[in-house]
Amino acid sequence: MEQLKQKGQDTFIDAKQLTISMNWTTAVDFDLAAAYQTKTGQRGLVYFADLGHLDNFPYLCLNKDEGVGEDGGEKEEILQINQLDEMKAVWLFCWDYGMVQTGQSARFKDSDVRLTLSNAAGQQIAMGIDTGEKGNVCYLAGLDNSGPGGTKLINTSLAGTLKGLKTVDQLLALVRYQGRQP
Image (cartoon, rainbow, N blue to C red; front, side, top):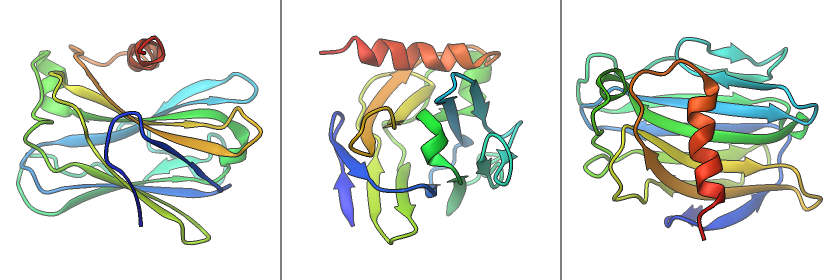
């Protein structure tokens, strides 16, 4: 299994369909989310309140909201992408639900959140969060499908702080900020 352990590491993944698993045992209500932009310019967000659709637009689907109640133990949320070739970009986020509601810093540094991305050919890529930054939302990774060489996966591991989540643009502000980093 390929590993992207550090912020800034990247690789290419060949896939039209992709499965992303987020696992953790920390007693925190983490949520996996995906903001996306299609090649035609449509933007949206798949998260616990809008699980998406796998067989029709947006062809992204989150299986469930795990970790409610902040109990410890094995937790997993799975996001499937059915038509990655229709997406210009997909941005993967994790947030601490309780801390986003209050605007306080999350517990990423003390967590064991990890992502595993896999395609139908059996390629697997594992990632952890590589941020010491404070925040309650983490822009985990970006899938850039705009170039001719396939889909580029980048470990972004960038934390930010929100107080409430009202629009996808709040999350995309982290993406824009990361793009200005050296």
